[in-house]
Amino acid sequence: MIAGGAVPGPDGALRCPWGLSAEEYVAYHDEEWGRPVHGDDALFERVSLEAFQSGLSWITILRRREGFRAAFAGFKISDVAAFTDTDRERLLADPGIIRNRAKIDATLVNARVLADWPEGELDSLIWSHAPDPAGRPAPRVLGDVPAITDESTALSKALKKEGLRFVGPTTAYALMQACGLVNDHLVDCVARER
Image (cartoon, rainbow, N blue to C red):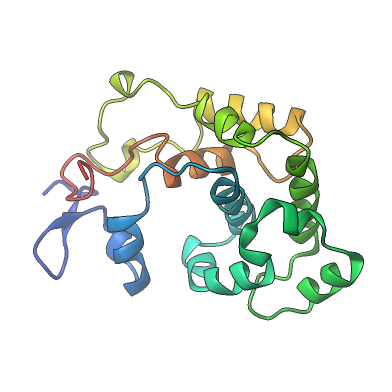
């Protein structure tokens, strides 16, 4: 085990250290993070949650994920795009989510933008920014994992050009990690090859 590298979990399997830092992280780390996500609604959920995470820890979002899903109609783009001012006020008063006005407004704007796109267009746009995995060595320690890449900067610019909000390069890279565009599980992590 290298300092900053994978650490053994309760089952003895090596994992990325963050994947053991809170109980909710183990399943998320092992079964979801870094696995390919496709479908416009599923990707809209991830774009939205990553935007809400900006400036906060991911565990805060993960613990409220079901509240977000309930509040935002399961992140079905067409439903969220139809939200009214009354819905906006409901969201601003909902203790089950992060009640940040700018982030709520960004989610509503993003849904309205995406509602006009042909089906599969968000999926296609996001996945067109996936880097060649052959050019990415597996990270050995957490310090090897970047916060921003050329690809995340390009994805951020592409999304902003289309009118999406709260999609900066760091948020775009977190999206790429969460949705499997990149595999940033540490080289010795049990989830890396899954």
